[in-house]
Amino acid sequence: MKRTALFNVLAALAVLSFLAACVAPAATPAAPVVVKETVIATAAPRVQVVYNSYQSDPEPRKAEKELIKMFQARYPNVDVVYSVVAHEDFKQAIRAYLTSSTPPDVMTWFAGNRARFFIDKGTIMDVSDVWKQEGWDKSFPKGFLALSTVDGKQYSVPNNYYWWAVYYNKTVFAQYNLQPPETWDEFLAVCDTLKKNGVTPIAIGTKGPWTAAGWFDYLNMRTNGPEFHINLMLGKEKYDDPRVKKTFENWKVLLDKGYFLDNAASYEWQEAVAPLVQGKAGMYLMGQFIMDSIPKEQQKDFDFFRFPIIDPKLPIGEDAPTDIYWVSANAPHPEQARQLLAFLGSKEAQEYWAKTLKRLPVNSEVDQSILTAESKKGIELIKGADYVAQFYDRDTTPEMAEKGMAAMQQFWTNTDKIDSILAQLEKDRAQIFAEQK
Image (tube, rainbow, N blue to C red; front, side, top):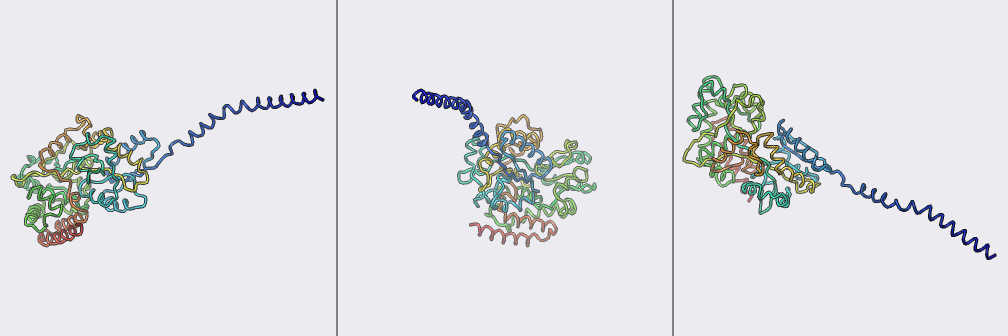
């Protein structure tokens, strides 16, 4: 019996040993399998970032698409949903975008009062941390740091800026032995010569009223000086001031003499470029981006000059609008939005923009040798200014800009109503700025 019991015990131990031997090898590799599954499960998920842009013209749109590809190559877990809205439609839609429960993460916009309006409303995110992280306080000129700052915090990233000037068809000028005018009298003489020879002196499309506002900017700065102009934009001067009337009287001369393109209100600004390219018009007051709408093979036939001086005793003001990026205050994906913002302000991105579209980069780390002769001339034009403004509808409030540009369209069709137009504008100014106090 003892031997049998001993035998049974030994047999049981043998069975247990056998089972242990069978199980043990399977237990050892189980750990790395679990680890592998954990790594896969916690991999960063792909995130969609919505980027809304007003860069609807073909060349800027193409450049932005390429920038997005560059960004996504750097951040493969971020998918950028690129939405482009026509320039004028974007201006109307931005308030709805920013107050939506799910606003776009990143957007393009304009520096100046147009930006300050939305910052004050609390719809734009403070991105001071991105500025600090990227060292932009050192690589961006102080003026652009100031342009991005409200109450000591940064809310936007300037991308590029461009100059405004009078672009002209060199072939047309050569045909009639004309030189770029420097003074108002010389400018009127050029217009007169072109008109007498059947060439429209000035091309313009005012279907979007901001193009007429550009004429008001320059005429007012050249007639009354940039300080008066900016104070008018800020609501500190009155529209029925005799000085503003003088600006409109100078404008009236050009309109009454028929120096502008007929039926200008029926053309978008791009459509009005065609007569300039065809030699049917001689000049066009526009930002540097006009070159995007001129066929590349014909761009060599165009140049620009400073808007003529009316009163040589006054300081010189120039428009140099600056485009910016910002993040919505309620952006659904703030971390990824900041990553995109950091990339768009980088040397790499701004260098690409400068090479592709000839815009002037804000980031001073961009190699200046890549700039074209046209861009360098534009820089010199801005350097020669005593004051750099943004633009009429960027320097004043949105409400005043809307009233002002509507009044300019009214003036365009009836130049004899200066007094009544300015009287109404003054009523609008008084009410709008009183409400904002």
